[in-house]
Image (cartoon, rainbow, N blue to C red; front, side, top):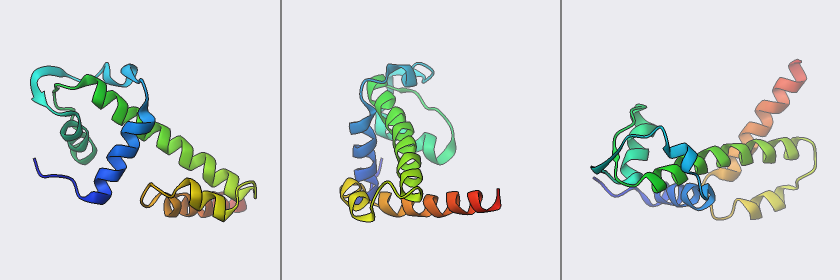
Length: 119
């Protein structure tokens, strides 16, 4: 397996770090002692949608839970930015270690703005 690019590695580390104890996300994942590592299984799922057997159920649970938590955080930050409850400087500080997160929140903020305007 090729080593992930530095930006992709930072995302994986971010997902793993915020994933916490997330066994429930790993329950539906095939587990095999001869399977691939959690990172490779996660990357395969993200790129192809196929769940490959992994030998690290805890790792895959943390990665998938971390991605879900990240999505929730982005939505909350975007809504707070839209409502004027979160300053741009605060958001930049929050997103400091996660590449592309600031841009993701700001883009979603404008999508939410457009959706509110149309409704």
